[in-house]
Amino acid sequence: MRVAILTSEAMPFAKTGGLADVSGALPKALIEQGADAKLILPLYEQVDRELLNGGSVENVRVEWRGQVHHVRFWYSDAAGAPTYLLEAHEFFSRPAIYGHNDDHIRFAFFSRAALALLKHLRFQPDVVHGNDWPCGFAMAELRARRRYEAFFQNTRSLFSLHNVGYQGFFDAGDLWWLGFGDPPENDDFRLDRNASALKAGIIAADALSTVSPRYAYEIQTPEQGHGLDWLLRSRRDRLAGITNGVDYDIWNPETDPHIAANFSADDLSGKRECKLDLLRRFGLPEDPNRPIIAMISRLVGQKGYDLIRQLPQQILETGSFFIALGAGAKEYEDFLQRWHDAAPRQVGIYKGFAGEPLPHQIEAGADMFLMPSLYEPCGLNQMYSMRYGTVPIVRATGGLDDTVQHFDPADGTGTGFKFGPYDAGALLDKIREALYFYARPEHWRKIQHNGMLVDNSWAAAAKKYLELYQELIKL
Ligand code: ADP
Ligand code: GLC
Image (cartoon, rainbow, N blue to C red; front, side, top):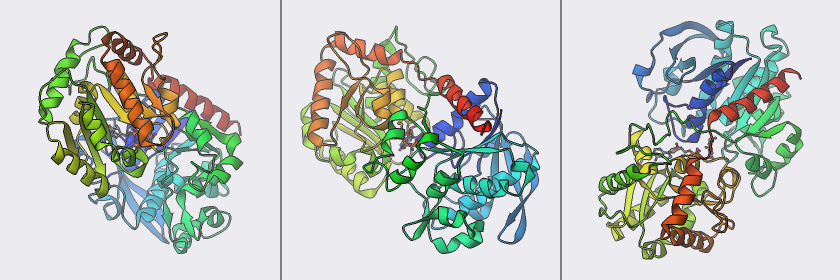
């Protein structure tokens, strides 16, 4: 099975969120299952050049806007899989990965160049696996080129939807010179008088997947479909939900080099040291008996800060510490700053995108991890938390609902706490419920233990992707 995975971000090269964790882990997991997988992404300014450890592929011929470009791809095996990073200074040597008004042009170029690389390498993939709207262009282009290019005739496509809230909108007037001027591509891109790369990808791909079964269902409803539920319903026979895995080579408290002390389900003593270390890092009093509630997330509406900012006083009154790591919208950063300024001995914040160690130190040192998301396609931190004995408190939506089981004191089952309505009162009730059990160590140990023993490794997810690829090549 030859698979080319296209992505706009992947660990350890470039990251803004969970897509990078997933793209960095899946190719390696597929190779472990016997597939021949290659990963392709842009070479951004922020990629550590030391990772480019295998030379480059030169002179890859890319036809673009009536001209021929010759581009270079750098090679790396730092993700445990052959990885090719597209050098194109004009498009990718910029401080931020997204948020430029020519993003559609940047990723359309990336898609074209990625397909050109496959030809250059004579790597005829069985499946091209694209991720999120930046790869919608590749899905559309592949389907079009299959009509006249023998090389891609037998190549099938899978489009993975990690977040339907980001649709890659741009001016439909640009379609023709991006190479999508003719039907059916032109129509496939059009949405609400604009063009959407996500929509085109959803129509053009041979099959679709999302990152949890629950989210696969939710995006077919008007409440969660972000205006595309009708389209997703029309493709539901080709839409699968596969829950993301966890890369336990990276997220494992027994071996994690970033944390103050290692620990395991059998011996949690090191976690106390991690907690004291975390309190110190955030300048909080070193009181190991008070619980730490933590959050790590992009600061966007999706992540539930609208609920938290209704509760600053109530959360402080529980006596807990609150530690937040986040980057994003100014309104939420300002809220965190004000909250910290009002209670500097209880609220610790880090505004910005932190390098590797800090998220690990928070996962290891916290007692509870909060994810009150408005929606959550999968979510990774709740799974990381469980492995680190940090109990998740989540809203029952998307992958959070699929991966966290509510604690039941009657039979000692469950890995965390879940609330249903998107409502500050419901969140506060759950925090209080969690704190009630925190104060009863025999219960708390059990919840921690249950979570630490859950196996969310990538092997199971990779097998499901392989089955999906197998079905695709029979089409
Ligand atoms: P999403 O992809 O929607 O952002 P996920 O839960 O899937 O959510 O993944 C988020 C990933 O990004 C996790 O690995 C998390 O640790 C990391 N992360 C989020 N915000 C930050 C930040 N400010 N600094 C460092 N890492 C972050
Ligand atoms: C998206 C989603 C998140 C998911 C991640 C990786 O960014 O918001 O829920 O875990 O992709 O699939």
